[in-house]
Each structure stands twice: as structure tokens, then as C-alpha cells.
Image (cartoon, rainbow, N blue to C red; front, side, top):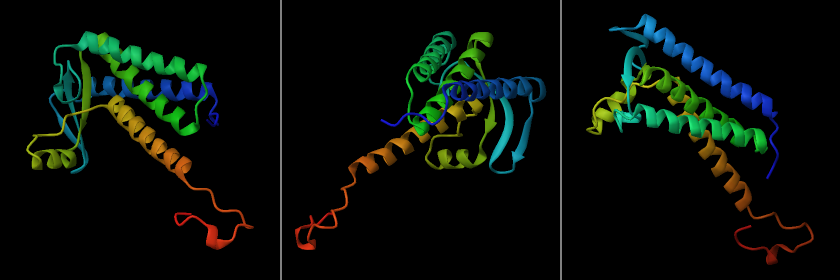
Amino acid sequence: MLQSGVPRLVLLALTILCVVLDLALKSWARAELPGEVRPWLPGVLDLTLTYNTGAAWSLLSGAALPLALMRAAVGLGLVVFLLRRAQPTGYAVALSLIAGGALGNAIDGLNAGRVTDMLASPALSAVTRALGQGDFPVFNLADVWVVGGVLLLLFVSVREDRRRGQVPAPSPEEPSSNRHPSA
């Protein structure tokens, strides 16, 4: 496995930056958005204030404390893992994003007994309504970090699998008639 080209302290700084940005936007939303919907990118992204005592799509509603403790354990576990064991750059960045998102929602859940959400997507809601699932849930930056980290992790994993699965090119001295058809 390749070692990370990203220093561990940079990964820690990225995780902390994700937490700080998430908590700052949550604080701003609580102060500025009560009872208001503000189009930010018309038709794409609106700002509105909601709270969630559960997980995505209000799953496990009312379980804010156990979910916050689980998020904290995941976030801190990923930070410890990244600080103790170097990872390839893509994996390391993805895990830092996931850790930052988990910790942002954990801190919010532990402090308030609920998670503050403020990002609403009319475009995503149009898709979920077309699928008969109602509006897309309102979310926050921590959710963006987690989903972005998971998508990056999937992308890097698929790319790495393809790289490992490639058949090496035949050596120049090998006659073309002896080449494997898939080479």
C-alpha cells in the first residue's frame, strides 16, 4: 500500500476545519434563519432551519444522545486511525472528511440534544418526490463531508481495484502470437 503524501497533521487540520466550518454554519443558521427560507442558489440550494433528533431521513428520531455518542466514537476512531497509520492520499482525505462530518454532528448532538440542519435542495427534492419519497431531507455541512468522503472513498477504491486488476503489458521480446487475447 502506498504511503500517504499528506502529512498526518494536515489530515488532522482538514478534519478540524470540517468541524469548525460545520459548527460555524450551524451557529449562523440558528441565529439568522429561524422561520425563514432563503433561496441561495435558486432551484438548487435553499437555506432553512430545522432540527433532527435522529439520523438521515429522521431515522431513529429521538435517539440524539446514542447517535451523538456513536458519531463521536466513529469520528475519534478515524482520527486515531489516521494519526497512527499512514494511508494513500485519497483514502486519507476521504477518511478525514468522514471524521470531520461525524465529529461535527456529534458535537452538535451532544450540545443541543439534536442536530441543526439548514441546507435544502429543491433539485434533490424533485427527484425524491418523483420517486414517491417526499422531499429530500434538509441537511448540514457535516452531512456533506460524510457523503463526500464516502463518495471519494468509493471512487478511490474502484480506481485502485482497476489499477490492481490491469494485466501487465507483454515484454517487447515476446512474440505477438503468444500474447494473451485480453492483453
